[in-house]
Picture 1 (cartoon, one colour):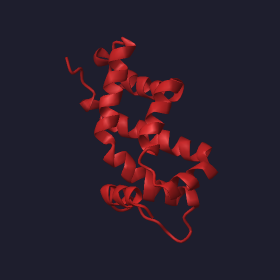
Picture 2 (cartoon, rainbow, N blue to C red):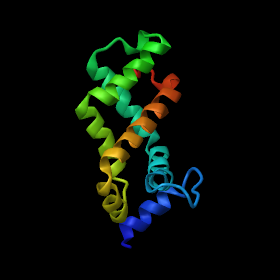
Picture 3 (cartoon, rainbow, N blue to C red):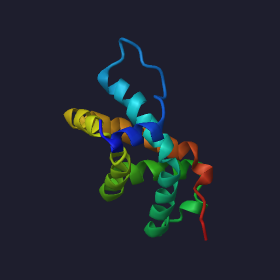
Length: 132
C-alpha cells in the first residue's frame, strides 16, 4: 500500500455500519468505503448542491419541504453532469485497491452511492440555505 492509500484510510477512519460474515461484497464496500467517504466529504456535498441550486436559477429556497426533496432526487438522478461531479468527489477518495473493486461492479455501487448521497442531502435539507 502506498502513502496516498494509507493517508486516505487514516483520514476516513473506520467502517460505518456493521459487517457480518454473510454480508455481500457490495454491502461491505458500502460500509467500509462509501459511508466513511460520504461522511468525510459531507461539507463539500452541501456546498456543491448549494452551488448547483444557485446556478440552476430555481426557486429552491422558497419551495416547501416535499418539493425540495423532489428537487434533490431530480438533481442527482437526472442531471448527469452534476451526478458525475458527485461521483468524482467520492471516487477521488478511493484507494487504488478500492477503485479496482469498484470497477468490477460500478453500476450497482453507483446506485448505492447516489441513493446514500440523496438521503444525506435530504436529511440535511435545513442546511441548504441561500448563502447570499
